[in-house]
Length: 393
Image 1 (cartoon, rainbow, N blue to C red):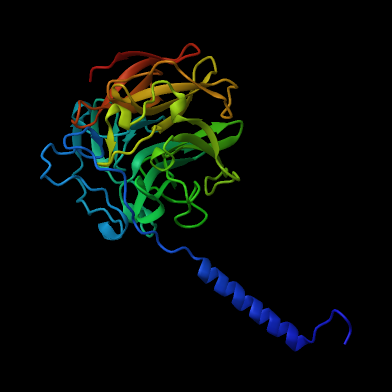
Image 2: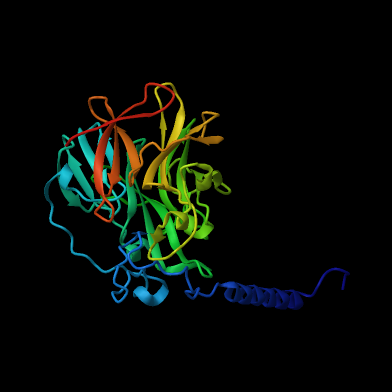
């Protein structure tokens, strides 16, 4: 036998053994499902709270956010589809409104948290809500509810972005803070803004953002032939929430960045205040931290690149703005010294009417009342976006 050459039988046996060892290693390395742990202290009776009102009577049950197996494998209760009807703008109730004005049909399409769509020709009278997405067979189906839904057009396709949360699939258990669920912004596509929007991801249920990150509120932004998703890395996981971006493939079927890039942290804005310090509970829990929410990129008429984003501050929910010093997505991003709009209003988005006016839609709530959309005029003729008057509807 020549040195360095093994008999064929020995070589085959070693190969089989190696294969078995690799298979065993793969099985053994599969992560065990995380068990929900103790969370942050509960909110006080009557305390202000995002995600459900905390009753003032301590004997009343507190609102519970589904965790792990406590919510029938994370599925939300099935709600009957609402009847499609005409409704005035002032009678709408929703969080995170977004309007896509389609120049082909001369129709305004309104989406929000909840995932359904309304449409209008004049911004005053709306028809809906319509179900325009098909997520059957995906993990998103367990979540059902799409948060902060948006519609964009890239090339000849329309894209629908929403955030889905699977509370039966925990990605991290942070002791005495939060049981972090699988949260992802997912992309669907259609040939029409009225859908049906279906998955285009390279694999069904694909995670566009890192699997072990708590990610929400993704939006699209194009720059120099590249298309990015700008999204929130949640404060519930980080304590100090961040805004991040990743580059997408030209057909939006996958992420091509090696890793996300952090643009800024919530605490960099002087008007973003720590939640416990301002008496705000979240999901019935006293979680400390600084919030990032709802990004939208824009350019003023002078070419200045800015971002709308929201957080919590002295007057509860608020809208802020930051600007890129380099004029590119790479930043650095400098926060404005004052909020753009406060008074428990936020998650606003810009759009241009078919007559060329730039408008801003935002949700506002009176204390613990429902969130209602508002429309405002804005001026983008200079280097800074200027909030003008609220539009009576």
